[in-house]
Structures are given as structure tokens and as C-alpha cells.
Image (cartoon, rainbow, N blue to C red; front, side):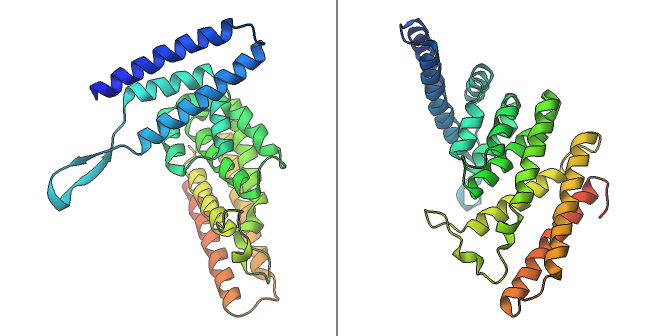
Length: 272
């Protein structure tokens, strides 16, 4: 712990000195800003990965339990970077972060809501991300918006609207086109597009269910989204032309989505 604190203090001193050199250099201010933003993104990403992969054990022998170790000095440094350098969170979401890293950011970095408008703008640009990347970014944005809406109501509203719009647009990818094996939809790295989108959809529906019922705007947005997804499930169930194992799997998936939406809407105090 002592060594980590020393290293972090040295890093902070180096960052401060580096920033002074960059801002006082004869290069254009925009170039210096881009350089510092890129630097902070690398540092931010490295610290978050370190924090989410560090564990301590409790007890001895086979009954040991793993508990996450959170260094508040790391947390404070990350929060400082987020407050000082707008766009860092949005850039990391665009690059792609594992869910465990997003969960850590949501838990420890409430300042992440300051990037809400930038993330919402990113989600509205359909050409900049693939369908799965866009839904993954929407999932991260939704978690940030719901968790920290009290710190930035306008940004949270816009981000929730943008995220739920992406969720609805991705419904076809989740269930797959009729008569076509969904497993043929693959990313360049071979990952199953449908499985990725399905996981993100269920995660986002769960997040919607955690919205405080007193937050009327977000609650209404969530209820409308859940109702639309339920309606899509109903209309897809009514479509014929598919039989056999594929039809059975499709019906099971649609019912699972429907049930999840019903439970989420019930948690919000509504009904389908």
C-alpha cells in the first residue's frame, strides 16, 4: 500500500509537470489539449483496470473469500481527471470497456455524468460505431445516467433517451431475422453478435428497473421503452412462417424478454 501511494504521488507530480510543459510549448493550444486528453485516457484506463483486477483474500485455506480492494487515492485521481478533462469517459466508452470497469466507474466516479451530452451525441452518430459497439456504449451510458441523474438532470435525460432509442433499434439483432440462424451474425473477431446484444438488452432492462419512481421523467421514459419492447415481443410472436426448434427457441427468448420487461415495469410501479 505504501509503495502504491508513493508511485501515485510521483505520477501526479509527473502529470502536473508534463501539463505545464505541454501548455507552455509553442505548439497550438488545440494540439496540446489533444495530447493531454490522450495521455489522461491512457492513465485513466490503466488505473481503472488495475482497480478492478485487484483483490484481497479473507480467511485461510479453501474457504477463502475474495473481496475487491479499492484504493481511494486511485479513486480521487480518477475523479480529478474526469472533472478536469471532459470527454475522457465518452472516449473510453467509445473504445470499449469491460462491464466490470463500467460498474467501477458508476460506483466511484459520479463526475462521469458530466460527459452525458457527449455520450448521447456519440450514440446518435450511427456511422461511427458498429451495431454491437453502439448498444454496448448505450448500456454504459444508461448505467451512468440512471446512477447519477441527480448530479446532472438535463444530461441524464438526454442520455437515457439516446440509450433507450439504441436499445429499441437493436431489438432485431437480439432475436435475429426470421428464418435465419442468428449464430451467423458475427463480429470481425468471431464473437456472436446476437449473444452480445442479448446480454446488453437484459442488462439495460435491469438498469431501467432501478430508476427511482420519484424521478418522473426517467420513470416515464423507462415505462415507455419497456412497453415498446413488450409490444415488439408480442408482434414477433404473432409472426408465422417459422417452425421446429428455431421457432421454439425464438418463442422462449421472446417470453423471457417479455417477462423481464413486466418485472422491470412492476418495479417502477407500472403495469403492462
